[in-house]
Each structure stands twice: as C-alpha cells, then as structure tokens.
Length: 276
Image (cartoon, rainbow, N blue to C red; front, side, top):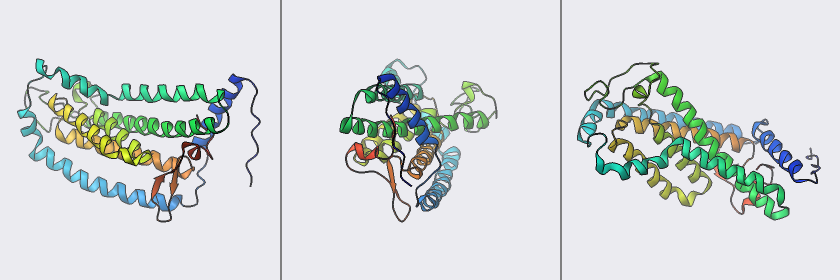
C-alpha cells in the first residue's frame, strides 16, 4: 500500500514540528521488516553466547583476579593520576549523552531549513545519531537498575580488598560498583559507532578499552565490574540496533538474519525515515 504524501508546512516551525513528530512515529511504529524474525533469532543466539562466555569470565575474575588487581593499583587521589581522571571523563554517561543529544538537536534545527538532497543527507545522519543516543541511554538505564540490585562495594569499601562485599538494593554510590557505568557507556558507544561506521571499529575498541582501564587505575571498579559493564553496553546497543532494523531505520537485514548498516550516502538511510 503506498505511503500517503506528506503535506509540508510552508513556515519553518511547522516543518520542525512535522519532522519531530514523524521522527517519533517512525521509532515507535510496528516492525515491518520481513526478515525481522531471522534477525531476532540470530541476535538471541549471540546474546546467549555472550552471557555464557562473559559470565564465566566475570566469575573467574571475581575469584582469581579482582583482589590481586586492585591491590596493585596506586592509592586513590594520587596526584600523578590527574590525567587519568581527565581521560576517564570521556566515558561518563552524562557527557556522552549530552554530546549526542546536542548533535541531534542541531540536526533537528537545521533540517527544516534545507530541501532535497541536502535535507535527505542530514536526516540520514540524524537517524544514525538517534541510534547512537538510544544505544547508550538504554544501556545506561539498565546498568543503573543492575547496580541497585547487585549492590557491590567499590574497591576497598569497608577497609579491605574484598571482591564479595555486597549490600543488595543499597542504592548508595559506594555500593554501585557492578557493572561499571563508564564501561557500559564506552562499550555501548563503541559497538553502536562500529555498527554504523564499520571502519571505525578499531578506534572505538581502543577508546572503550582505555576508558575501562582508567576505571581500574582510579580504583573505581574491579576488573569484573568493567567486563560486566562491557557486556551490558554491547547487548544494549545490539537490542537498539534490532529495534531500528526491524523498522527499516538505518539498517538492513540479510537473508541469514545479519543486521548491517545501510551502505552508500546518508540520504539512503533516511529514504524510509523522515527523522531528524
């Protein structure tokens, strides 16, 4: 059934409201891709494999590595670690989300003033930015719930190195060690950017690993915390990628269920998505 033509308002603010509304409608509409079931099955297999493999790694780290690793790190607030404290901020969820949100707002404000190919290209970029933003936001939200439920003490909370210092549902910052929020943000962003721009995957992997390392050096987390954060971030970004692909937004689904970014110019990404 052909899509009804959209009557575009003549004034800027009318076009802006139309773009925002259609963007939201595209994101929440029912999935329509004919191969979404194959993609769901493939994604479920990958998630299960990640849970099993990374789950074993996390447990092994907790029993065999966590205490030894944090005992080797320099004391908190060591003056020479100022640069590590600056570096770790690049994985702070608030900064990452505000940056992505600001870029989305800029695209939203610029798109109504453009026409034709220029607008289509900008809308394609907007669709990809939406994916990045939601991948990080969902992963961080899930991570906050897990922190509250697990209630693991940060390194040396309680006065000694103890990998099994738990106070479930504590809710305080001292008992919000697992999973690492910075690792969630960094790995969700790394996966999402790599999914959209595959050539950036090595750079993004290095970025995520560096952020994870800073959390260990600063004694903010145990090794198992950052691995758990990486798991949450990757699975969160995978879930949002499936959501977009099932609605034909920015991603294609191959016959075997593989989800890939739409190739070619950005305007192709926006072909079926009137999204800022």
